[in-house]
Length: 233
Length: 233
Image (cartoon, rainbow over all chains, first blue to last red):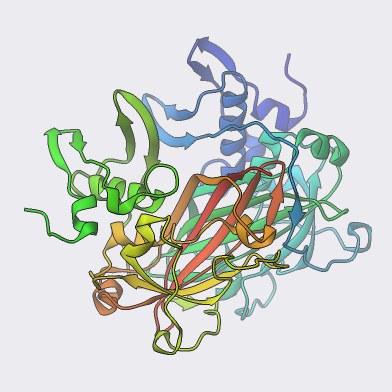
């Protein structure tokens, strides 16, 4: 039986055949158009966990809507170093709660505290930088597993909003996430805040890229993630 | 008839069936183990160009060895900005030619001029940073097309060599490249040098990520690319 938490409902999948799982969209995860991409990514990671597929297709009414490729590998003890540094940020308890606005249903699934680059709202101005940094945790402090980490990789609203100082149509085309965290680090994290930071490198002819990192309070780099996004205007 | 240039030979594919192309490995592109990953990526991009597949499998002796997913989209005129900045580097003409050493056949396919983080050689020491920056062009100044840009995305030797100050077994597992350049920018580039820069964020338990950018002399960001790499030791 799935948990009653919206996240657990979203990644609850029925086994239809050996190679087929069935899930469903949920209104709690609605975005401006369709569902939050992160929850789609989470459901696909969940499907992979129940079978260890490597190539996955998500279909609706017989039409492929999303494809994914997953790669698994054994972690071994080796020399290790985190070369990147987390962005500077006060503890989440010292940052005012923010969010994505009432129009984005899935925004309420998370407790978001913006340290830099919050959503442009009253009298927004174009920003010279596309960087957003926020503390984020599940609203019900549901523990972070790999599907949840996949969802967090897509937590950022489109960078073009920040640069343009307001809303323009935009959406993720493709997303790649590398999970650096092992199970021990996820267990240590539990349902606590993650420090999430993202920026774009280039906006050009209807597309931009986004590069992002997810950190723990203790400075463990959980995941690095990239996406390519379309935009208009 | 394919061109006689090693790059043109490497991406020359025969049409076997509507959905099947046949290529072959070439000794000029040999790496320490198997072929240069970048030339494999280039051949797959070339296969996609001849058919517009979206999901591609590369097989040898009936076994799938590599898979790829490609996404295409129309470029439209929009607001544009390159937010990232190229690394500082003297012009390529002022940098001494370097390379990857005689053991790496494919290294000779390129004219490489290292600005920072060249291959650890005589009396190598661990480096505190994993950053490598180099000017690179095709040795015969063959013009850069999209398959060639895919190959350039994998031009960097493993970041772990730099951090550890020497060779350890390592290889790319998965690579994602976003092509920001349009055809006009590739035409303007021709066969000139590209400024390539790469760094790693985290090395942990046998794996590290690599984040890289390819720039023109004029400061156009041609591509951003990420990979995950295994290593031992």
